[in-house]
Amino acid sequence: MKNNQYDGYIITSATKDKYPILEFSKGGLPTNISTMTKKSQLEVEKYANKNNLSIGKSTPIYGGATFYYTEYNLQDSKNTTKKKVIVDLVTSKIINEDAENTSASIDKIEPVESDEIEGAWNNLENRISMENNGLEAVVIKATSKNLSNVPYYSANTAGCAPAAGAMVLRYWDLNGYPNLPSGNTLISELATGMGTYQGSTNPSTIDDGIEIVCSDHGYTNFNAITYSGTMYMSNVVSEINANRPFVLCMYGAGARVGGSDDYGDHAVTCMGYYYQGTTQYLNLHDGWDTSTAHYITYGNWDDAIPVWVRP
Image (cartoon, rainbow, N blue to C red; front, side):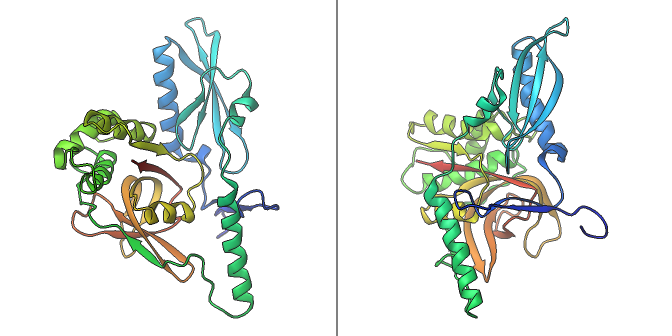
């Protein structure tokens, strides 16, 4: 509580088969964040329209930490329920198009790799041990890394998501994949592939758009992955250390370090990270500033969905 008002929460794991921090919030659940519920409902509306149905009753589903869903009844012209679908509020993706068994649908989500969980616990215990002994905790050996050859493109050209994807693909164009276009041509092709409309892009189509553009230019080996789990700092470090910039879709994001304007709902390109003590930062080409990278503090958002891009 803060000033007698709800200010957030943190859920921790009691056992080591899950991440130490399962979920945290600075004040809003996905079911209460209008942008997330709206994006999910738009996805269901598209599916319903394809099947000549309309949306009826919706029921929120909580599947445990970080797993928030809504089940929708889809009705025919006589208001008879013909189908049920479950949509993931975090990714805005339909996870089951005929949800007769809710628990079975949710159980299909892939589990997190155990070595990643073990690493998170080792980092935490290392910090606790060193702090108890009066030593500075070292979470990850490398304090920073930034990838070069990531260009600056403006989000004003066709929207933030196509610009963020274009910055990632231009990086790969300069690192072994020279058949990809660049500049406004690349941004325009990505906007078409992602289904961007009036500058707005559904986060669930960003990965498809990237793969479509790569395939159109002869590169069928690119794998764009919308990560549906919680993005931990260890995930960021792993991608950047592997020399892979990625698209980051932020929701309800605060201001960059040293800035005053909140990012809000915005897609950017992450091309680096930096540690200062126990505070963690992501380095971004944000599409607003077309000449300088900017840091944002890890977790300074209501939600963040990364799209890994891996040749």
